[in-house]
Image (cartoon, rainbow, N blue to C red):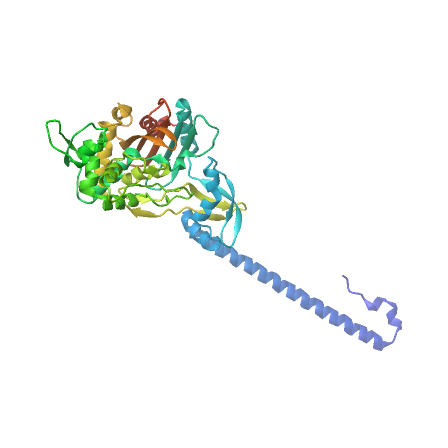
Length: 450
């Protein structure tokens, strides 16, 4: 606003005293204006200085900003309070019905967020598995694939043939573990120094049978056979494992190793599912024999837990907690959660090495050999593969339950797999065959990938 000039007004005709007073007011106004301009300039200068300082701080911070999202996750967890159990609360109900929501409401103790969840699922691998199952359509099928060394769940595929029920069978814990539990029995015997792959055992009866007389009242006769632990594992000889459980390992040690492998406790994954269970009695020898050989419906397991067993062995005896969610961000952008799976040593590395000897024999000379025929003569000749089969008629769901759990190790990467099918009347595909096709897909040469 321009300053009024009294020298050009009618005020010149007024008394000199009034002119002097007006001149004083104008001088004061001019002084105030100059002071205001000075304050404005200083404020601008301080603002520029603050912005310049902030820019320098941001620049320096980004020079040392960690590339790994794990470090930022620690900061955000401290700030926002989002942890694994909050992730589980937000996605479990959907996952149990075969949904994997990208947009969820994350609720912590002090905050809640509209979040975007990023899963570890590899879409192409999961799509391949889904299509593989639909090619055969067993009555029930569940397949889980995960990386043993990272715990990342790369695929979860579930199928129910004769129902519109969307229950996710990969987290269903009612499947009988069957002979998959022989992994636990063998681990207990080897890790305790009781046995090694070359240890020999006498037994009577068929490989697939289990009778009290052959287990609890063994008598050597002309029908008695001699076998190694490796062969007994590969062919899944029930009597040998029943006797190992009762007379070598014992109930207490068997329970200890079952617990080490995650039975009777929540599966350490970022969704909430029912625990796998063992049901033998420590004062009942026959109950111990049934459990040690897997010849019981009282020992149950979920496919997501079953995949952990070969994962532990493939990872030198160390269990890395399985994780379905990689990270979650606020809808506005900030990182809220980053998976940081814990690990724990379940077995000694030498024990894991010996168990891989047993599992390799299963696919090369044992119960899964016909499904891996010619597998090791071509592209995958150098791939280290091992596994364990299992078969038992179950009640939940009803039908003949068949398992294959195993691993593939290329030296650069590893994959652990659990495949289970249930057949009501006739079988359509064997789990070991499904596992072979998945391993071929996952480890196929880069030149043949799309």
